[in-house]
Image (cartoon, rainbow, N blue to C red):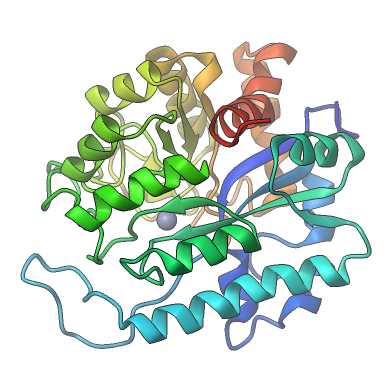
Length: 346
Ligand SMILES: [Zn+2]
């Protein structure tokens, strides 16, 4: 149990590195000050019982109106992608350096468990899109040595490996081609290195290609159920069934437009909508295969949560709904720890 009466939370996705590195982000030092802006910093994380999470390196597309024929942002320039990725990864390591032992970049399941027990924030380095990785996979090997343990093949644009899903409402997530030959090679390399592959943001064909190839549990770090919110960013029932069959998991995305039945960007969305999504996911894939993937600092979330300090309100609503302490522990962190352990090894 955490100090607020709820189990500590390990969360599957945040974009705090992007916010801190932005023009008003304040850099690594701002992570240690209680901010008013954004969702995640160390003081607010402690209030909310956030014990760690997967920290994304995400690269914005340069501002241009040019689009691919399918309407996606263009593939990134490789040098730009590598430079931006280094900057965000360095941000995470600088935070660790300045944290006086309060945050650790974890590389093993044992380190992760120890951090959660010792109230040290655990950070997993993640690339949200393999745009910075060359097709010889040299960057993958170097980044792995640096601490990369989780990789999304794509964000919502094409790269050398796959194509991201185009974000639409009430359309099929089958919005483009599956993995390229380089993409298949990347999946095999991640399996060998035991880097977790994240299928959130993949289009449907890419998802099924990964499902057919990978020997690791299928993980969607920040996606919801399409049956309740028909966004292409969410998972159809057959996709959820494949995740369950692989003993993988889904992290609930807190973005209101991926939660609500009407996909509206409305901050007054009640927590009940999140609880309903959890109910559906648990019903479909099982209580051992659902967790959180907030997308803090990347999306519009319910003002009833507000920021990371509001996590106990969600846990409290789940308890009221009938999730007992054992179920809450699974949702809060145990499922993530299990999947990462299975993927990374001990
Ligand atoms: Zn995302």
